[in-house]
Image 1 (cartoon, rainbow, N blue to C red):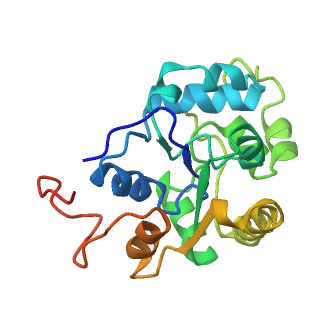
Image 2: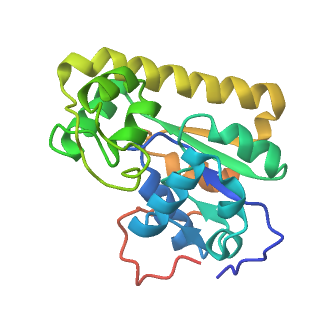
Image 3: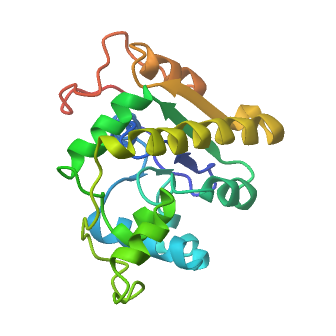
Length: 222
């Protein structure tokens, strides 16, 4: 089993939400890494601080210092990966992509046709700010920034808008790392049956041939 050396490079999963981020966290946990995955209080707190630009409060926190792998919020949000790359020059990054229609279907299904999480932050990420401000002109936006409120609808009328954002952002991530350091980024497809073997190879992890992310966690894999 591996134990975290605080001097080891950080690993950030910067895949869009609904693109296997939780599975990535399980993968690294299975091989003994210290993982900061989704935790409702911590994830909301970190997303809020990122949104407000209070990044030192994230990087100086005990949870950040004591973990090596980071998935879910706020690492995938907007251009945060650029800050992370320049802040942690030896860090590694993971980008999984998937069919954009399947991704959007998952977005719709997650919160039963409503915006995921906090709608104010969601509207900024997915460029629906004008709609949000017009719909909630009397709302105290920043006071409610930590609420999971699901205030706007997501339906098929939004499909092309969301898909365009999803596809463009994935391209921008790849272009950014191709410019700075291609060796810092692992890119995989969620539909690829060999994705865990390929991810393991990137991080020099010996992944058993029969490995599955749903494997019984009582089975020792390391």
